[in-house]
Length: 157
Image (cartoon, rainbow, N blue to C red; front, side):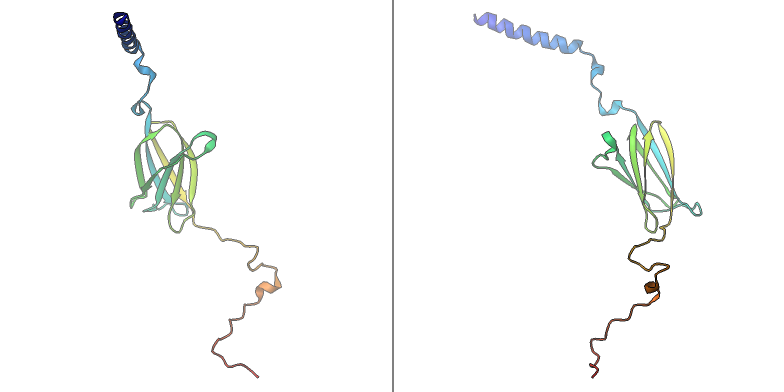
């Protein structure tokens, strides 16, 4: 009885070893088996085409339902407005660019080539409007606000 239990255990072990040896090694892909791309960014001013240096280029993967994945990578542009990154997996990528004195840029790109050149034109902020600010046709809007009273002034009789 001991011998048959022992032989059953050995034959089961041999069966697992044989099955793993016959398994297709292509069933599991490592992270290195997926295609990746090199992205080259050029960030310029929309008004005159001059480069924007030290702009932050933030990359996020985009998952199901256009939901941004956690984490991300931030690059900084050089004095020529250029930044590059190698190793971006194929698929949808959200790119955001931030620079002082410019509107924040954001757009999704489909990464599907080994090398991609992406040019981003940053715009200056536009005038902001408020429902509470001075209105063009509002007669109250032409009146300048009075200065606050002086706390050190003597009261008038």
